Each structure stands twice: as structure tokens, then as C-alpha cells.
Length: 423
Ligand code: AMP
Ligand code: GLY
Image 1: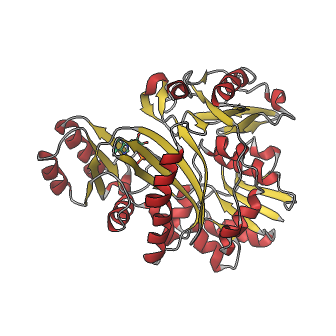
Image 2: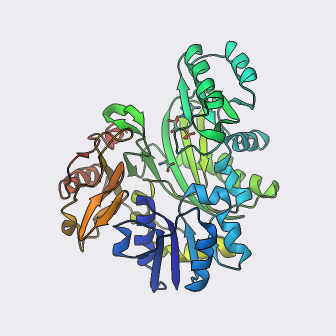
Image 3: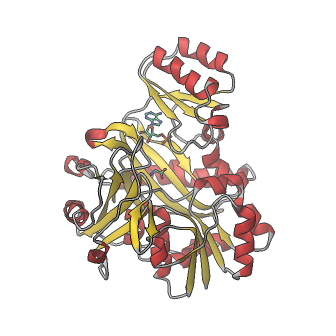
């Protein structure tokens, strides 16, 4: 089989690494990819939003399966563009990717189908939003409706902050049209868990749980980022939580999408908060998480191509997902200054230390070739992952592994997986 992967981050590197393990796969292409992905796939210089070029490339190379990693092309309808040409593609169509593409849609869906989530109201006028804030309780949460690189969520401690937030999102349009509509919702407390799942329209199969660290600095200080590290499984995702979510969240979401005429095939990523009143949905994503994927896929036993195909064919009920009885931790190595100002172009050394190992991995996020050298090319540069028999061992291994690669400006959090000690 020939496979095309669309995307360029650590998530797509982990997907490509897992796809390469399938005996069915003879060739992998990645558009646009990065320097790490280039080690296992042929990278092609087509952007993830260039649908016509992607489709033409897939036809020309007779690609058997295309996997879309990123949210923007999914929400923009890349799957519909592939299907219109009779090409096999993994991911939700545009009318289903709205589950991630519009927070107002997803909140209304949860309300209509009685899926536990924070209380909320949607607003498309700033005046109405400001008026609502007069009688609200604080803290309160403001969310841009559309995609905003994970940055469209504002936690506001006071009325003044919230009013400023409405201005930022709706009037100054910091996130463009994503802020035409906003959701204002109840502030919840509790531990967060990321649960990824495969969905074939009817059947949903849950992968092992994970936890992300979104803030830039230790102790969850600093700005929100794309994710500074992850661990899997989450010790807080107990059998009881799993049972609750299976009963009230997962299948109900899939059934709700079908009932709305928006059959969902692909990945649903449930961002959950384990509140004192039980698990609630913080958000849905319509794709693999980054950097959750980097700790989930190395623990997955199945041939992932079989699972992708079962989702497309509607035969996921015949697949049993299996995960190793161990743990994995990912520490992101970033450029100092991320997510604000940082320099790029520094040579990275030490990749040879990871060659041939199946317990340590280095997934590339922002790297590129400069002649024969691999250099830093983004805020998040690498995701160093290690497995271990349990979470504490995996964490110790991951921090050991961070010493094996080096570049100027290397920055990481030193407390990834700290919550493990509190479990
Ligand atoms: P989201 O993009 O919706 O996952 O939001 C980003 C982050 O904001 C989440 O991971 C939470 O840490 C936080 N957050 C979002 N919604 C709420 C809420 N209703 N209450 C408390 N924190 C929230
Ligand atoms: N790690 C969070 C996300 O992928 O959105």
C-alpha cells in the first residue's frame, strides 16, 4: 500500500512511525512533513490547505490511503475533496469536523443530547455578551467559536477581565472570524484527561488515556502553548471514570452526530475535566492530539492501518484495540522564548543516540534540513518520548533521553508528569 500523511508536526511524525510498522505499507509520503518524517517518508512540498494539489498528487502516485493529521484541512473539507475524486481518506468530512470547528455547535450538540459539559451561552453580538457578563459569577471562561491554534480560550477572573476578553475576541478580532461568535461558559475545576478514540460512524473504540501540559513553564505557569509534554496512561482515568464516560459521553456523541446527519468517521479527541460532579467534556477535537499521539501510539499494539481501514469501511466493531501494559512520557524540547519570541536555525545534534531503540523515540515537531544538518525550525522542536514499566520509570527515562539531543536555546519543562506523584 502507498500511504500519504498530511501535516508537519510531532503528531504526524508519530503517525508516520506507526504506519511504517505495518507490513501492508510499502511507501509513505508526507505533505509537507519535516526533517524527522523525512527519515521514514518521502516529504512533498505541498501545504496542508492546498487541497487541489494534494488530490492531484494522490491520484498521480496512486495513493491507497490518505491520513489527515491536522484540524485546519479537516474543518476546511479536505476529506470531501478526496472523496469527490474517489480517493480513500481517513478523517471526518467537513459537516462532521464541525465538532471541532465550531465550539458553539459542539456546545449546542451536548446540550441537545444531554452530554455532560459546562453550562454556557453562545453570543454573536458583543453587546449581548457584555450585558450577560454583568450578572455572571467569576471566574468565567470565554471561547472563540472557531479554530484559533488552541489559543482562543480566555479564563477571566473578574468582570473587567471578561469585558476585555469580549473586546479582544469580538471587536479587535485577535483570532479573526473565529471570534465572530463566542461561547461564555462556567469555570470548572478538576484534573484534565485527553481521551483519543477511533470512530467509524457508528462504533467508537477508545484508546489509552493521556494528559497534556499546556502551559509554557513549570507548575503550570506561563502562557498557553501547543503542549509541552504528555504522559500516558493517566492514573486519574480510573475504571469508574471510564465506565461513566462510556455510558454518558462517548457513544452518545457518536450517536448524536449521526442523528444530526453528520456521521463522524475518524478520530474524536475528548478533552475531559474530572470535576467534583463527575467527568465533563471541555472540548472535542476531530483529530489526534499533539503531543498526546506521541505517547499513545508507541503503546498501541494493533496495526494502525487495519484500524484506519476499519473506520473508513464501517467495520470497527470487528477490531479490538490493544495497548501495552506500560507507560510513556513525552517531554517537548522547545526553543527558549516559545510561545512568544524565539530564534530558529540552530543545529541539532545527538539523533544517532536514538537509532535502533524501541523504548526511546525522538519525534520531530519544528525541524528542517540545512544542507546535511538538521536545524531548529519552530517553537516546539522535538518531542522526546520514553517508555517504562510504569509512569515513574517512563518519566525518569524520558528525562534521561532529553540529555541525548542538544541544540542552542533548548528549553523544556522539568515537571512533566509531576501529577503522577499525586495519584
Ligand atoms: P479548550 O481549548 O476548550 O480545551 O480549552 C483550553 C484549556 O482551557 C483547557 O485545557 C482547560 O485547561 C481550560 N478550560 C477550558 N474550558 C474551561 C472551563 N469551562 N473551566 C475551566 N477551564 C477551562
Ligand atoms: N494537545 C492538545 C491538542 O492537540 O489540541
